[in-house]
Image (tube, helix red, strand yellow):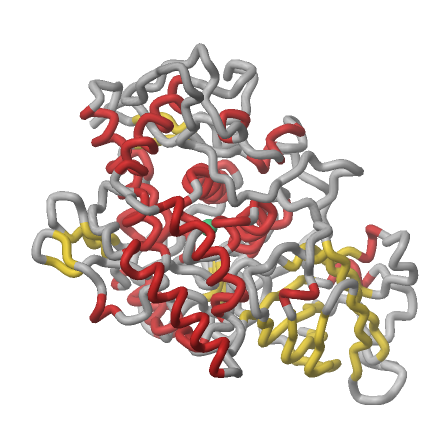
Length: 535
Ligand SMILES: [Cu+2]
């Protein structure tokens, strides 16, 4: 088998306008995938409007009617995206607005397999790896039909997390920025002419990201330091320490947006979605932006960095552990199937253990070396981590605040047992800040930097920074159709709390500062509960 190399979109080896050979063939494939996606331009404004409306619990008959009307307008467009070789189909695999699977169209005698994505749990990485493989195979088939280098071509990745060494990498790959193709560039399958040729890799709904200014910090959206420096892959049930990939999932009904995401899911993954904006801001539309696939290839690469270069390996290196929760978790890990319908009409089932060795899957990355890290608070010492990458740590909430509405900059006081905290803070304790029941009415337009014990909001003390609260997926978890569970976010506050002299957990102030200046009020972010936990 040929092992193809996925290459960085931002690198010194790529010509100044960003059009490497692999990016050029990606554009050729994307052009074909868009030709098979009729109605995309009509769909765009309807979908963006729907993203704005659908999360609002339709309180009035007029609003319900408006949502119903929009759903009625998008459905006949989506119904035509039945061919797995189309961009429209591939984007629906992630999530679809067509609410009722009974109404889904058929392709080659089978009902399409849509709305399958995994977020907020430890299947996030393996599911998206399988998804990228299926997408890459579709792109290769298009490249083959154009007599291109289909065997050696591989999906380029948007190496945003390399921004410490390549500052431009925090912006969209250069070749994706312009609406039209450069005059001197030949893209197979696109005929030249007198008029401008649209760039298949451009997506007009994007709002960012902009070049980062200011001192680099682990709050920056492309930061992968915080994720890569986590000590464990996943959390065991009911043990809530911040992991790389997310929580073990027993109840698979929460496959799409479970509450226990890992750091890499939130940042740089989720933060990159939110920064890019437009189609990328919502599960329903993200796959329609060509940068989606390049962003996810980078997230997939970070998994390789974590497993190999940083030496963590993959879960369950020795197979099924004997007995107990670990064995139960192994069964979930190895039996959960990721289903994909292919262009020949076959259904392919992948499982997590099948996607761990990328070379046997036919690809590798140009490099999986860890990026230049930002200084991050060191993980707490002496973790109790299983050989299969699980942590078991019990934390107890001691200070809690409920029903928080956050409109812009939010500062909330955590309340607890009512004393001055004497005797509660002891050396060696671990501290978490936990957000539960995060809900918003629209796809998030920004992320928040979260601080504890901050004295001056206007001149934030970086030593009080806990991290970035990315809201990607919060809107989706607020939808009735997904059970309106809301999302959770967890921050390891151990080092920061230990660095605050005379810390009083019962009078701790938490401050949220938006990272991008966009209309946050319309998002209506609410938090059911914020807890300070000690373990
Ligand atoms: Cu994503």
